[in-house]
Length: 168
Image (cartoon, rainbow, N blue to C red; front, side):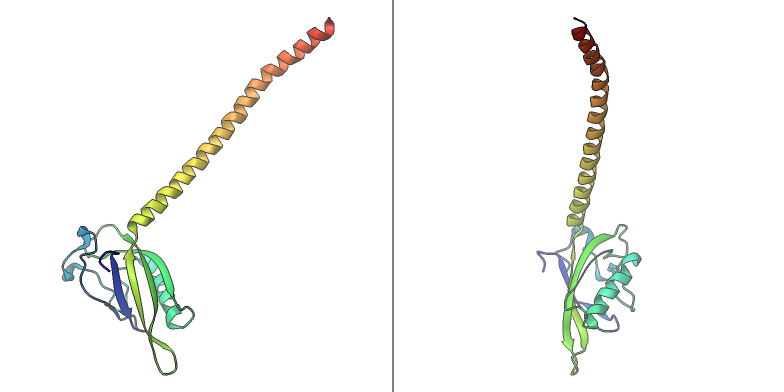
């Protein structure tokens, strides 16, 4: 788990989440802080998850609890420490851990990993693709304009050369 910077967790039906183990040595140094400075998924509020992603994460976990999905998978932004200014990208996957006698899911186990570097590369590739498409469009417009500008005087020259050759 240290080598993949993963954080395993277990969650109950009331969003009571327990992070398994406090070893944060696999995290970037800036996120290796004392326990009291870490954010936790507590008080039925996914405090570590950015507000715009909380509903998405809750819905994915709800689907696993409801048996609608066997494996939940979602990417979201959040923070690990109380003093962290910028959120980082995470990817979490989860699956049922325990079921009751009727087969209803009573707890879910999951693993969250930081995917910030992958997301940066993804965004950089999208930006490079956008710039390449923009350059291709500009090239096409330039060639179209140049073709028009070159054809206009050539048509006059061709017209006059035909007149001269027909006059002889």
